[in-house]
Image 1: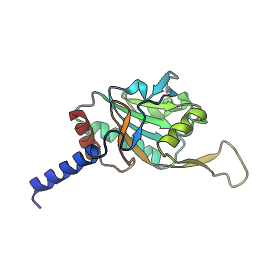
Image 2: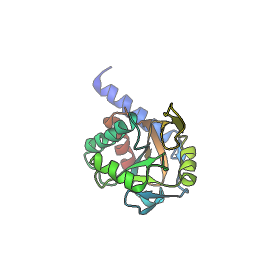
Image 3: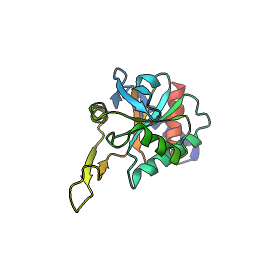
Length: 195
């Protein structure tokens, strides 16, 4: 297959993926409101406060020993890949709100040198858990203290998903967060920008 024909085929697949199912193909958050807090303890209404922009949304927890730092690194790689980051939000929501307070998220954001386009969000479990359920995110505590029970000493078995949300609050694409290529996400962002 020639490179021109291959490029045309890939473009048609991308267009078919977005248009065949419509804006509500994956998840509809357009009418939802989740009151969360950012790393400065400011209340944020998710996703309403991000309407009008495209948003990349993922879930992490700051005590994660393995994949969450990789997810955060991939988010920064995606940001660097974009020719123009105007109108694109990078949102990381904790699925461990009991430990991930706004001040803990601030330390995490500083540790990874995340710029102002990144928003770190947390909230109480009665708000975060319904959002996790809505997006089919798995987040289960697993005990790591073999010598006895300690309610603060646990890991999380969790999903590894990155979502692309359009300007109206529809989730239009999802990816394996730690390994999706920045080029793939960039192409999808540029497609949504052209709609």
